[in-house]
Length: 132
Image (cartoon, rainbow, N blue to C red):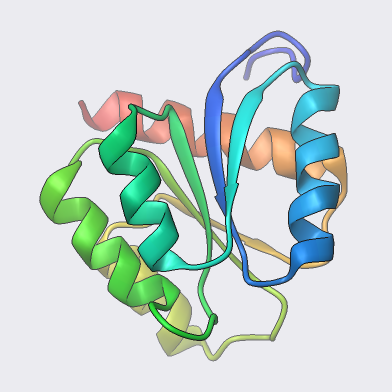
């Protein structure tokens, strides 16, 4: 695996919790990533349409356009975009399996550290790149 401090990516981080979005921005900046923050799946889709991202980090449980629905839409338009699903609730194994089946490359439980987030982002990027 790569050195956790060596990779700079453009990351789209999507979560309905504004405090977590702010914290995630600091975590991403710590590792040199550029990033945009979105509050729901609809906003994420609009940002994805405006510019290409290297990785999508997406909360599964959100009001409005939630994570599974957003993953399905992202896969239709951006089939190779690496997706890291996140959740603070302990989701049922079926929810995690569904996220994987519809196209998430990995999962990270909240709360997480900056290093946890960095390693998970690098992991889903490597997994997606390997799948081509």
